[in-house]
Image (tube, rainbow, N blue to C red; front, side):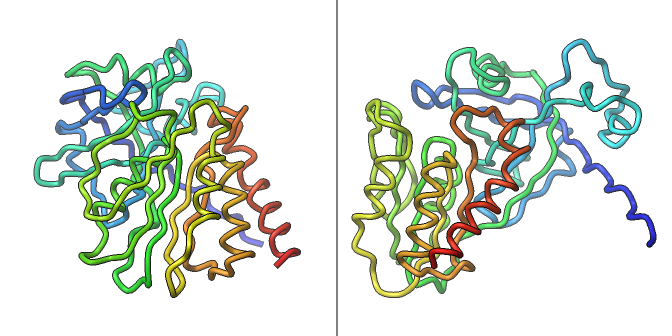
Length: 278
């Protein structure tokens, strides 16, 4: 059998902070621009994401930075640490990339970086990826998620076709975390108020009186409640798999490295469980 060629590392872009602002007590917006985005492009997906690269502690990489070279010449523990974030907006004309970050004090890598970002700071990143966008011919749309999915849900709500029927649910800790979304469809803000993450979302979607026809659904956020809603939509509501974009962005008790390492196995287990009960 012929040996499979090694996968080439994607090109890294370099964004320079143009401006930064605190949207809510726990959401920071950073706008990136500069010549390092000259080759960055994004399509019509409203869930486009980028992988931010944070240098491993004490490691200096050769310039110009080349992810392929890093993978070939450095041990894995010295590769940059990646953190995945949804693109809130890409303005091709201005060459500006907007990314919103959930910030919890000094916790994590990306949140503190975004909180402290100042004009002129730079960050390397890979991407974009993405696969979902609202379809004009869908009978109706269901958008549901927590803070981590808010940028993608907001982008999707703003991209809905004129006259579209949509039910949009966003769970945040409290009213101070609500944001303005430029859309004609109503957005239902669910306040966690100390309850387990996702509980309010599951209750709201289960209580929803579904309009006629199969929806196109986008459900993302913490993996535990995503699993519950996936079962509800696939098994109980019998919505076709092709109509669903459902994935856990994160999982309680895991950082991104740990979650990404176990995500494939988790998803396979969830799919197997739901096929058995379908």
